[in-house]
Image 1: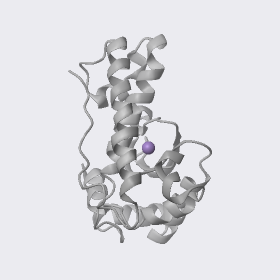
Image 2: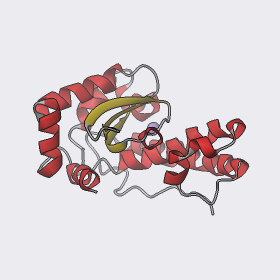
Image 3: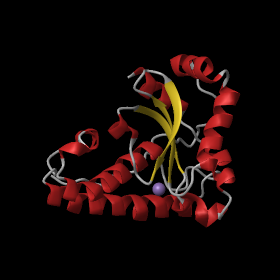
Length: 200
Ligand code: MN
């Protein structure tokens, strides 16, 4: 079995004008695709090609230490990007509703306070990585960040929402202005999907 690049759930230009088609296309067809190709090689070398991505990411310690790093990096790279694309929708944005909205209000005071804290975490993350909304090990909502391609599944967390803050995600359109990439993100968040993840 080999891992394959999942299709985007929308066309490359579907996130315009917030996220431009060329950036989305390169991000998916080059960056995301490269993680898939390198995962296949790393998983083969580590003897875990027959496992699911989730199994690999939740049991990295089972992999021989000398083979583990490339598996962790590329399995995370594949999973995190798929999860990111599925966090966005052409008609996304607005505010959450349902049980996740209540949980956000309970945890952060209000949606506005959550949005500010998540944006700050994403803007202040040093270097390459991701900002996340997760359900942590204590069952509480938490805003976190992870370096490189570390996946919350490997930390025993349940991810609900993420933004990619690697420069490759935004540099073509936004150059060095990561906060504008983050501001545009709020027009695209697929809150229905976040609610499904929370309720699952
Ligand atoms: Mn990326």
